[in-house]
Image (cartoon, rainbow, N blue to C red; front, side, top):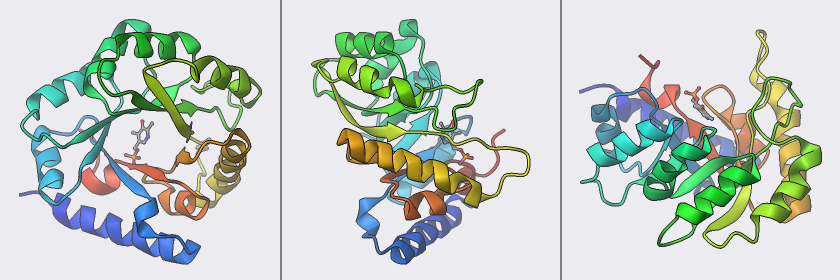
Amino acid sequence: MSDVAARLARVRERVATACARAGRDVGSVRLLAVSKFQPDELVREAYACGQRDFGENYAQALRDRAEALADLSDIRWHAIGALQTNKVKYVARAASFFHAVDRVEVATELSRRREGAPIDVFLEINIGGEDSKQGVGVDGVDALLAAVRPLPNLRVVGLMAMPPQPDDFVPEMARPHFRALRVLAERLGLPELSMGTTEDFEVAIEEGATVVRVGRSIFGERK
Ligand SMILES: *Cc1c(COP(=O)(O)O)cnc(C)c1O
């Protein structure tokens, strides 16, 4: 056995402590276990501890993982990485959530390919305005939302962001970006905020995260 059970328990404690500090109900934060590049066995161990939400970055990895773990029937897969339109089909089939809508083309294809229940999606925002970053710029979000909202087989539930991480990063540096994302979501009338990783999930909870995406704190360093 690995130490995933102990690590997961520790992360849950930290989530609960951050919620208490922020005066929030612990049920208002969904812990998403980011399993990218981790072996299937570790995902099974986390599942055995009651974890149900898991995230993968790459569409083919998500497809393979969902197949390998198809016996875990109530698991929820979250696609959290940018998508090329030719990979959308894997997400349409396997995922319950997609966190990285940043172009109308990808959203349109996802809606076209989706069968059954609509998929819940987040618009990914380039909240730090970085040149190299994925996500739609803050000045493009209204147009993107207007284009994506009418699509029949997806439901826009919130915003997602990865704040800048300079070499001297400390969690407090993310706070103004998390706060800006919350203000933006409020203005748009979107209830969910996907923000915070191993580096800064407690600050994200204090600033209103409804989903935190945590990988290494649960599974250890990626191979
Ligand atoms: C990898 C990844 C995470 C998790 O990062 P950790 O540092 O392992 O917690 C969260 N969100 C996205 C988009 C990622 O790619």
